Image (cartoon, rainbow, N blue to C red; front, side, top):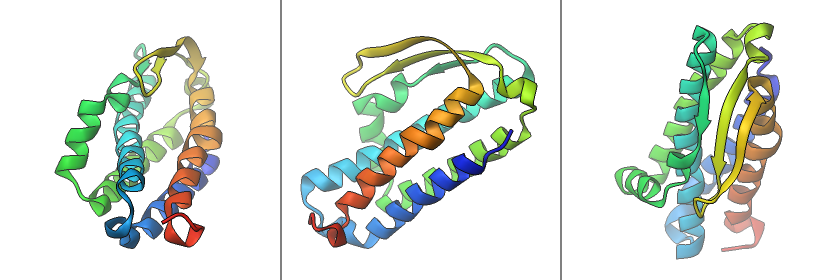
Length: 162
């Protein structure tokens, strides 16, 4: 499966996160919490998506449930256990793993339907249905990651926020 758009989205996200690294100690508490949440959420959701991609590759029924990547306690544990730079490295590692798995998918596997249950930050279910895996990847590349990259870029002091 072509991973060009997904790789580009990760580069943009990681560039924004890396550029923010030196500014993190001087950010206000709210901005720092936003950066922590964003990177933790991406790291946790990428780990979940990599597991789904392995299921698709193996021909097993695949299910997406982003609850753990939205759960405040899980995000707090990850934030407490890592530094900003550590979270950036975790996102980079998980992104590389997910990109490798996506690239290994055949066109038939990319079209596989996966069951998806998605919740918002409050835990409220916003979607429960089936999606083609390639649509999940497209949304990640074109909507989800660019939105988070923009959030991180806006936190940077050079963007006029801090």
